[in-house]
Image 1 (cartoon, helix red, strand yellow):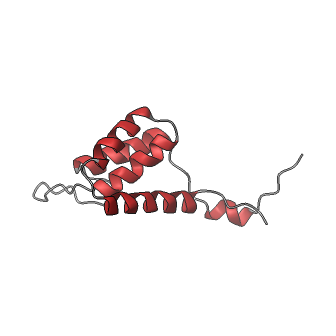
Image 2 (image 1 turned 60 degrees about the horizontal axis):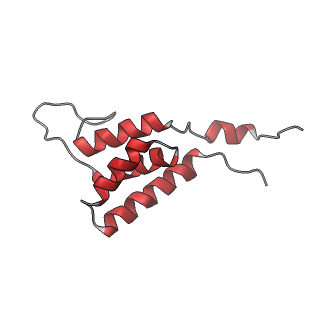
Length: 104
């Protein structure tokens, strides 16, 4: 059996983070810790991003991370249904952008 993979597809697909990396991103967003591209200036107020945190915890939970499931549920209690819907939308977008496309 052979697998035919378009090299252009391989070049355009971004690496999917593992559940631990996703979990850490969720923690960073939920606690306001600076992440790549954000300012680390001490005078800048940390910015909590519950939508982004929920997205990362959701993605990590989908990969079996039990701690992420717990944090996601706790966050959901603090979020509106619209915010949860946005987090789920962002999680789907992440998967669409970081998953290989099936060959036609």
